[in-house]
Length: 284
Image (tube, rainbow, N blue to C red):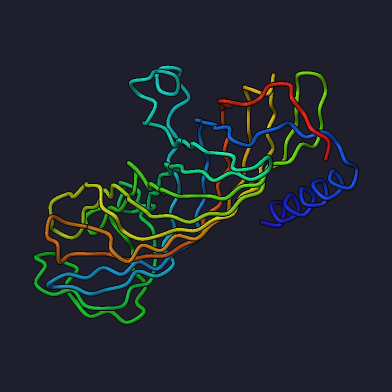
């Protein structure tokens, strides 16, 4: 987090110094861009509340990780499999030379830690009630230490934790040498979460379906390595907040979960600019 804040501050100073120095800026107004890439994500602990006809309980300080796909050209570069890894897609439009509005999908994956060996399952704290579930977990709990075993709960947003969002971004030229540009990017946005939640709870059948579950917000900072004013490689760091009050957990609509957590995301992206006036600059 401290590194991200430092990067944002340094990028702001770079942008201001560039304006003061009256450097050349490529003309971008009216152009579009598209990028595709992949992410690595991490999440804070969260409290997850589960409600249904015969239960109402909360698990506190649940730990989760992302799930990276094996590094394979068949997975990352095969068009038939490109949606399997944790990916990022975005299309944007520059309404002036610096600012653009964009829509994108951050396809992250969220996996609650739960080792298939019951002796290694995650420990948490539970409060609430479970009644007539047909399992050994019926009872009343009050801040009770609790081991989350696979026969109690498996909980994943693995196809995935889909953050559909709009962002406002600013892009500034930091350095130009012939056909190469180095650009800074700052942005912020908000959007909806449509996870495909894979859940097995108590003695219910496994449930795995897309569902609009909540909202998210985030801020980002990035560096854009651009060639011929057309193609680029981009690195991004994001931090944000996700709140999902309506997560489907079983085939019954009355069964739901809710959780909120923060995330940090690192991206590597490959993009192209369209309708840019290549090579044309204007003095600020």
